[in-house]
Length: 309
Ligand SMILES: Nc1nc2c(ncn2[C@@H]2O[C@H](COP(=O)(O)OP(=O)(O)OP(=O)(O)O)[C@@H](O)[C@H]2O)c(=O)[nH]1
Ligand SMILES: [Mg+2]
Image (cartoon, rainbow, N blue to C red; front, side):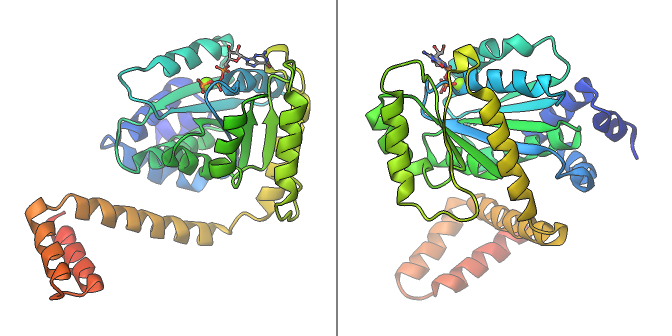
């Protein structure tokens, strides 16, 4: 085993930071990092925490981290900021809000900016989660703002997904309904110290009544993240769900097969997008004129893209 891998697995922070930077920036070392850590994945509990802006996700994560630390667990946090890297405000803000743990070697926080690369955010986030997993973090928390498609994709990476709502935001409930209701394993109504918390919780429960429950009954928990209230119950619910999700986790070979197929699709899309416009235009014209069938056009474009890469 190479030195850095040994250091990473022993939990060395500097090595962890370097490995994350490599996969985040897709440097030449990134592939070697991902290859080396692959046999060491799947030990961390990965939990996605999403919800509308300002619901209190970062504050809640801060409180959850405290609970995990008190339980003797180490933590990694991946904060995904989909907004333009130019503003950068939320990233800085999150650093400050989670700053309470900055002196604790058991907590490692990394913020990712999307930098606008197409479909790249969820891939990058998945790689960063994997590096944290391989470094022996017991729990990896992924914070996303539940606004757009790419954030939902990121949230979907986590086997356990927590959706955070705040009371009295009727529009947010609509947004949650539209986008993230489907992915929630656990609902949290944070800011339960505010009026209307019970009403929001009631609305969520009403929505859940329409949902087909499998083995897991989606709980609606109330928290006051600012005062550390309800966090133990949340930590317990996350642990319970993760345990259940573990049992339905695909076997390593099935998981690898799925990842290879996903990676191949991604590779094909990127290679074709990298072709010159003129080449693509030519295929488009042929398809539009009926000269070329769609599947054949796709095959030719792919063959050309592969030949050039
Ligand atoms: N009253 C009350 N306010 C809270 C609670 N938790 C968080 N807040 C406040 O809500 C505001 C937003 O909290 P954040 O933790 O930044 O929310 P967020 O969801 O991470 O926000 P973004 O990352 O910008 O999407 C802050 O001013 C918090 O102090 C709570 O339990 N009760
Ligand atoms: Mg936040």
